[in-house]
Image (cartoon, rainbow, N blue to C red; front, side, top):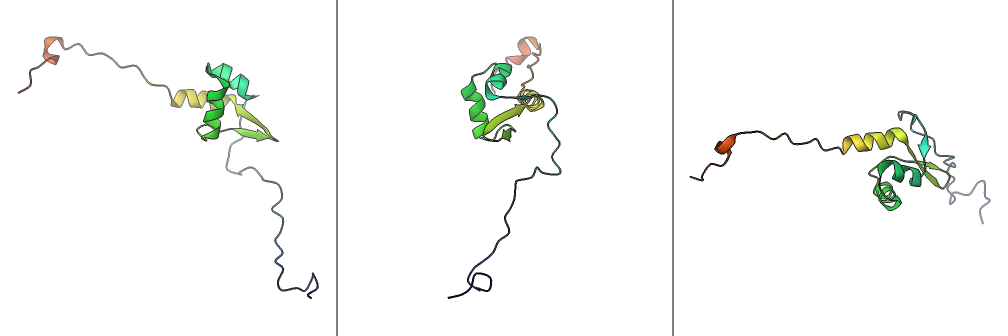
Length: 100
């Protein structure tokens, strides 16, 4: 039997340690909201916000086992999903042309 220190069969791996934030990621400024507060701010239900989180469609922060969303992330989500209004053009009867 091999001794633990000199055994060629054992593989020692360094412990990965705590997960560190990405150095390139900017810190989330502003207040962190829980799911209920985020849902109220979006005017939606908690289930919708949780679905956005589970589908990774919105950035979130894990604080232990709790999920938090930055106000700036919610603002960016609303801005990115805002559909501009269509401007109606007045062409008169010319817009209803007959097919050739």
